Image: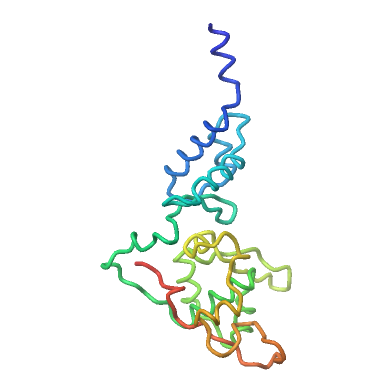
Length: 216
């Protein structure tokens, strides 16, 4: 009897049990969970990726969905039920025009240095703008360039992807989508040229919109 009990300790749990373990970890975590974290917590031999993919299918029609955010996974409210989570007492805060432009450039051109951001915008970037975006945990420091002076670069964070419901940078909307949604003026987006336009074309400005609203 003891031998059977010892043997069971080294058996890989059934997939149904692995899915339950993954669910428990996800619901107990405040932040998206990386695969390595699942592997560290679950018994040896478990396949968290397979369990996650199974659960992703299961939750597709539920009130919450399983989302892959960058290299991590999280449980999130189904998009069509988001209105249930809203509170009328929430005060919305819009980013400044400079912050929106800077954030857009970093998102579409990362990793990008401060000098490159200024070159694309055509104006200098204040330290306060970058500090604000980093304080919001939407932007973080990237690797230094190997160019003279070894300037620091900036990249968007996993929290940025999570906030806007993006699985990866590939999910960022294109110029046509932004324009159709009314988020762009009649000029091209920062650092992006439209067909038949020269490099001297004036840079576009992303309007302050609900896309970049931040709950306080």
